[in-house]
Length: 206
Image 1 (cartoon, rainbow, N blue to C red):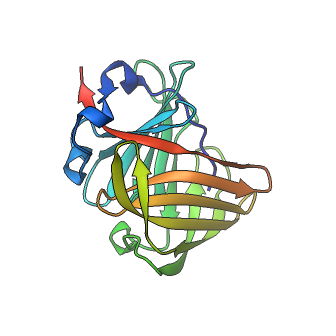
Image 2: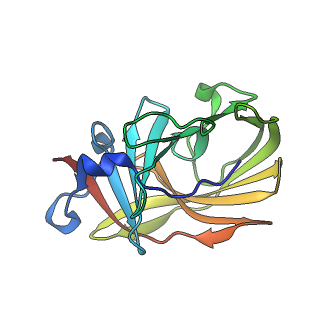
């Protein structure tokens, strides 16, 4: 599974993150509509919005060129598709990709403490060879995660992919009560790093 850089999301022009301490802590229902925003210690942000019962779209925001990157995740942590859009909302040539798996979306389980399972998948990108991978998913014990003025029960989920161009481990904190997963760490032959998420708020329409 390829790593995705965090880029500016055009929705930042349409929505603003609510002031966390002055508002109630976000709940699962807030994923409907504009969504829920998460902010990192270096000022990056991502907005999570529910598409349907199994999928959440994540848009990435930062200071920089107005390119718009969006990922869609199954159960908050398993990448389903991705694409980069220009400021007018037009998909950039060659930027789209999606995942073919050996099971239906409905057969991919919601993360739960102690869970461990594997699956086969292939990343499909137009004009490129398929990247066939084996994915291992493990879920550790829950903990209390403090984000700004809010506290949530979180589950550490580690996804390890083998095959393709490198072995890669992705670490998510899955917020059980929201159904959303936040990428907090990456490690592989050519990439390593972490993302410190420090705040959460409801996204408000301007």
